[in-house]
Amino acid sequence: MHGANESIIVQETELITLYPRLYHMAEDGSWPSIQKHGLLSTSALLDLYQVNGTARIEIESNHRPQSVILSRDGEADIVVRDQIPMSDSALEKCLEDDLRPSDWYETLNSKTFFWLSRERLWRLLGARAYRDKPQTVLTLETSTLVAAYRDEILLSPINSGSTIMNPRPRGLSTFLPVADYPYAERRRTRSKQDALVELVIPNGVPDITSHVISVHRVLNSELEELWRRDGTDPSDGPAL
Image 1: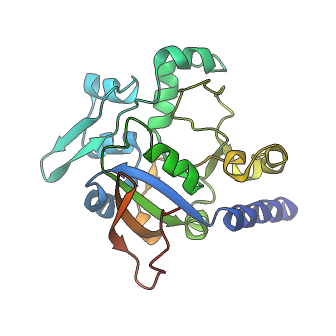
Image 2 (image 1 turned 135 degrees about the vertical axis):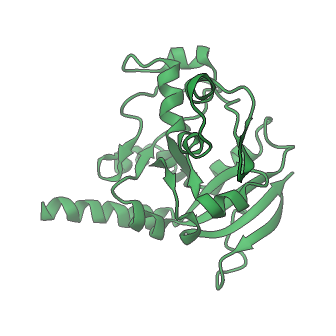
């Protein structure tokens, strides 16, 4: 067991060294709610806002062509983001392991996602569905997040929430623990940003403010700083 633990630590160290920053794109205006509740998965938000029954199934198990507003007494309204980059028809072609589109939507809705490269982040920010709308971007410290969630972290080789343009196969083995992820093998034939695409944490990160370095509002490639951890470099953020 000692050797196995050493192997995991080595891979964690490599992960932190190669990808020292993580990025998350959230709905414009969502930072106060994230500060209060943490960065939560869609399923965790549905729990928090006490959404159940048919309304929950519609949000959690089906494709969302547009964003959905959640309301609850005593809480500010929040937005559950759309799933424009996916479709049932495309998922039916690329899903493996006998999964159905509803299975994949439920899988994604149970997780929180982080980009490991600025290039990937900006590719999403520049997508047609989002480029003309303001977005909130969180920049996080990989080392502290990994230390806090090492037993939960999963890694993905694809943009698991997109089926645009030749959708990649996906299934039960898409999300793997750090120790099982074939990074070295993938790096032999891929760039750093394509060898590892997403870092994933189930349910959410309640203590997200312990790991966030800066928060920016982004619109048409222009950045406005909303928040920064004391003592951090003013240039530490999502700018390319």
